[in-house]
Image (cartoon, rainbow, N blue to C red; front, side):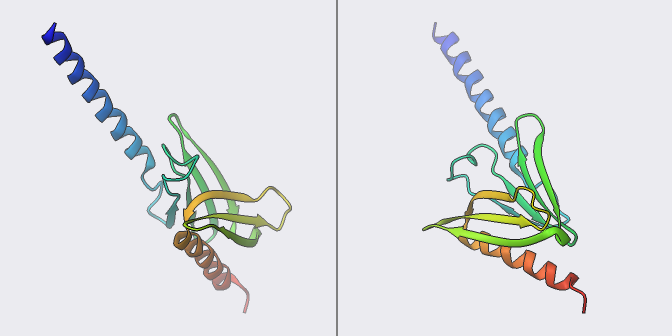
Amino acid sequence: MRKALTIAAIMLAVIVVLVGGLIVMLSRPFTKDAAVFTASRFTSGNRMFPTQIAVYPTKVVWYTPKWVGHEEQTISIDQIASVRVSAGLFFADVIIETTGGSQPIVCHGHWKGDAKGIQEKISQTLAARAPR
């Protein structure tokens, strides 16, 4: 009986380590080619696989990993009309609206500093691409 409990405890520990490792692996930044901002795990909807926003020189990508695959939405920098930050006490939502009238990218649960960083990075990228 005692041997069976020991084996069960070891198996449970191995499963917990494997699942934890998988969650960490799937939550790492999805690219190294751009500035990536990851939502906080303390917010709802971001506990297992936090949403990420990457700002490239030509596009902005909203990326959410899943157990199998991921969900991704891309907006060209030229199609961004505005970036709004709706901040609370600690966390903020980032709303990226397009010029084409399609649904905006809404990312919940970023730390306020990261939300401002997303807004500034997009503004800098837009300013760099503006005709002179």
